[in-house]
Length: 336
Image 1 (cartoon, rainbow, N blue to C red):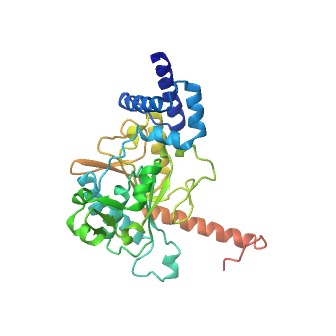
Image 2 (cartoon, rainbow, N blue to C red):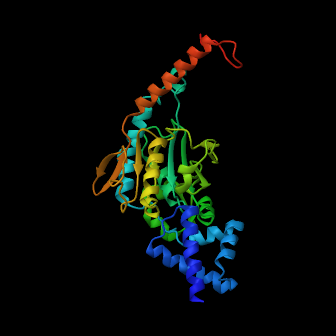
């Protein structure tokens, strides 16, 4: 029996690492063993081939097994100094960068509206939603003109169970203590058993199921479905900031390197990468600049939002020249 169990564990370990790209450490192997033990007790099934076929056939069984190795624990404003840096430094820098493209005081100007770009932030590995809602509260509190630009916070996780709770946006009263008092009054609606995130904050966040460890393998037409509309992950310069706290901990070094390349491509020039306090990227090849605030570090892609403006202007000029040179093409118009 032990021989069959060991074979089941070994084959499941290889299967999960290959399919999910999660690096199974000694502690995760213990969690996998416990999950498989429950399966054996429930089904009396030791045959590894039959079980792997079940994982291929039943997505719910595969996700259940995967969730046993994931840490779904999180809280609002986890790592206080990190969110303090986000609120006091990163958000104002993002707003200042966008102001160079479109002044919030001239919203109806055709020249500035042409370069309208949303504030788009990615919460990768959002668990039950506390992180993206914390991000949304910080943006509302820290921006000089918080309603001058569209705000889109894209939150992803591979756990349907976690995303269901995140979309509900309802939490127990114990979670309330992690939210600053002034934000509680503005953004939390409490009752006897818990509290709900306000509609003004919820509307800024869109949740989507995906395994970010596999995003480097996406095809040319891959999109992410969000309430803001489909988002092509093959488009560079999508996000001003990416939160991927404690995501790299689940990866082997090769996957970590691939994710860093993906993050760099998806960030705008001057965009910010925020990782967990137990994570580091110094062993990898990357182009990020390290920045510090108190005891924490975060990272910034070289360049400024003005660089992105120059790219946009060049593309517009090239399109205009093409339309003048080839006015008879379908859909073409003279650019004068």
